[in-house]
Amino acid sequence: AKEPVRVLVTGAAGQIGYALVPMIARGVMLGPDQPVILHMLDIPPAAEALNGVKMELVDAAFPLLKGVVATTDVVEACTGVSIAVMVGGFPRKEGMERKDVMSKNVAIYKSQASALGSYAAANCKVLVVANPANTNALILKEFAPSISEKNITCLTRLDHNRALGQVSERLNVPVSDVKNVIIWGNHSSTQYPDVNHATVKTPAGEKPVRELVANDEWLHGEFITTVQQRGAAIIKARKLSSALSAASSACDHIRDWVLGTPEGCIERKHSLLIFSSVGTLQGTWVSMGVYSDGSYNVPAGLIYSFPVTCCNGVWTIVQGLPIDDLSRKKLDLTAEELTEEKALAYSCLS
Ligand code: NAX
Image (cartoon, rainbow, N blue to C red):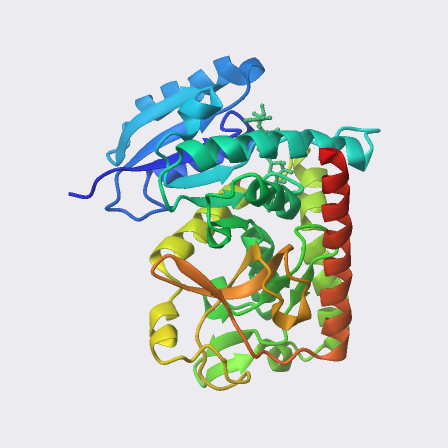
């Protein structure tokens, strides 16, 4: 039997936390044969609610769940964890300035970074969900120098899955037959959902989404804005922000990172990292917010969402995709926003 893996969820008393911890305990994140010990962190005002979540986890009698740590102590929460899903943060409240929200989150991510750097297991993989997700991840990277930049990521998989969902609805095909959309940039309304390389499995082979939709007006307009503004639409409808879809996407992100994207290792072995153009056989990638190395002329040193493949717990940015002029502008626009956020975050540090 496998040794249990310790998984940290911060903000575990919140609504994403409530949807996420049972998924982890059921093996959705790390696989049906991987026992887990859940570490749940929240702040003292939420301690009682957090304990209630722990009681429910016990009551659910999950076979894979070998222990639960529910705590408001960041050191206890971080000790020995191999996976850290950072959902806790300070929400933007009515009338608050962007800078005030940023400075609260910078303070949180700075202190949690140090605790992870000192007490997490070696090679701990970190996923930041809490907004501003990309910039929180960047702050975490700055203040956890012992954690490799390859191990610090943020969630744009929900946006990626939303884009798959929109194409699936539009074409009336199963979402599992759609692949290789890309979310570029920030997890914000400047993100660029790109279908230029996306395909749909058909009886006649993989066909480009562009060809099947055959409506550039929709692809350049409503499709993009629907994905960009889906979070707001969920709030309007539910009076609460996305939770089950965020939790599920966080599991997808970690699962693909740890266990690999479908053909991730084959592609690596044959150095097929340059994907052929749409229409011919190609592998499957996913979108992850990762530390930019300057690929696609995105400024290095930002946490930016790219198409990646994963093999043996390592992500690699998909290289060589042609970027047209319209896309170039959108890639640059969201990079500019992230550069501004970075500057704002740094101004909160001084
Ligand atoms: P909730 O307000 O329900 O839960 C947040 C929890 O974090 C609360 O229980 C709170 O007490 C806790 N918390 C606050 N400060 C903390 C700290 N310093 N340490 C530990 N816990 C702390 O929000 P929820 O709806 O669960 O959303 C959580 C975060 O995810 C928000 O920042 C939200 O904006 C972000 N989202 C990110 C998404 C993404 O795709 N990257 C999508 C969904 C979501 O909007």
